[in-house]
Image 1 (cartoon, rainbow, N blue to C red):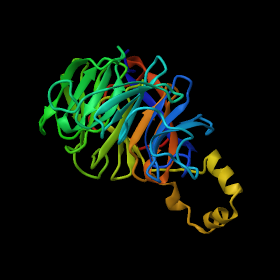
Image 2: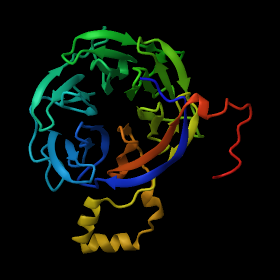
Image 3: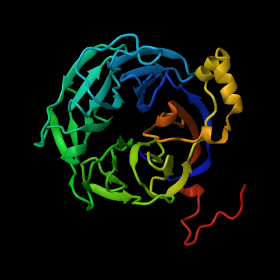
Length: 349
């Protein structure tokens, strides 16, 4: 699949908010199902970690627990079989199951969307095929699973049954080297993007695992990173990167050039409105509270895109999902001028 030659950027705009405190406590990752359901991994309060299923209209459909039993509105109604300590990331397989990494057990779990365990595989170690605190996961076009092997400072490719196929990267700070990588995403062309957390940058590898380029570097200015976490690339080649410590998501084009940033513009979602309507004390507290800071992102850890231009951000410390829409128009080579030496958008249309 070839990305467009260029894009006319209409706008990246806030769309809506999903979830709320208690429903999606401290959401650390999410994955999008083929039916547009959102599966949200929540590291909630009361020592419970659970998976919440939401519709894109903010309907609460199902929740089940990995760690803890839930209760008091936090967590799910039942616990899934298997061993779990610190679930980290999710990936939806085209066949309909969900895969999840666990930094504590050093394993990968396959489960159904209804909460039935299918398989668990993985063993702690440093040799090829072994895992040491796996974090981000993503599928390639062949439906093999790419796993961020965080404390082994590399990326490993496995079949869905756990057979090791390939290793990408090694420890260090040079080109193609990694230091505690966190998130991963795969482009439609099978290019691999990795958030190189301790090196404070994004690295891109081709489908064969060869280094292509670095995006960004240390800093808090536009185009730089402090704690790059989750990331996602869409069908147009746009790359979105969450930065937990600076509480923003940055957009880069397919060339790795910074385009703009999201710092938060949240409003109340459907679930939050229904809760407030039934709670007079909470209504009064909100009425007395300045709302300007309430819209901001706070420690975003994950970002995902769908095929309709929507961008989903796990607003970790605000216990919600902020949704944006990236509206672009693909352009051919014949429709746009050649790159300019000193570009400046001096007129706003």
